[in-house]
Image (cartoon, rainbow, N blue to C red; front, side, top):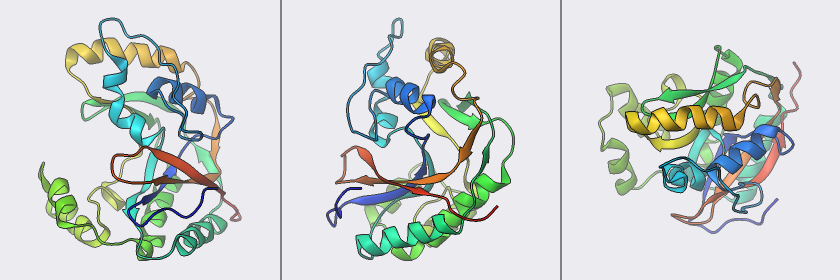
Length: 233
């Protein structure tokens, strides 16, 4: 647990592999940073490519899948954590389907290999349960979200929840690279698949929420707390 963040900080609820899960170690090494400790990690070599550059954006966020997108607080840190703890207390652990590396709109990410309604329900619950804790985004952030065009539904979600890709627009993904060209993908896809090995596909439970914080704009995200799911199955 860390101390209460500064007013400019952002908070997010993510899924992240458990600290003892091999995927945490391997995925963090691929990105080049451990979001648990903040320590840099030695990355594998990619022939002819700069892996540090290819992973710069996801490295800043840490190995994760977004449940409640990052937001600034409209309430105290204590109130926000209490809301997250209450959500975790009423949510039962559930099995996560095997994961696999996939192409998602041009970037590589770990995706679930079969549908998981419980996972989608958890993401929806995270978005809604902590929304009272969220300060509204500024005009610059809204403009950035709209830059690449939004559907009418995505615009409505942006207005309501401060982010366009939530609820039915949400897709589980653990980002591993920036957007890649076809030539880059031909090198990176087999490389990351081999590097992660069987770790993504191993059986695992979603048994906690990872509360991440970002101290200020441009700072890396860190795991502030892991909140166990304590609901009855």
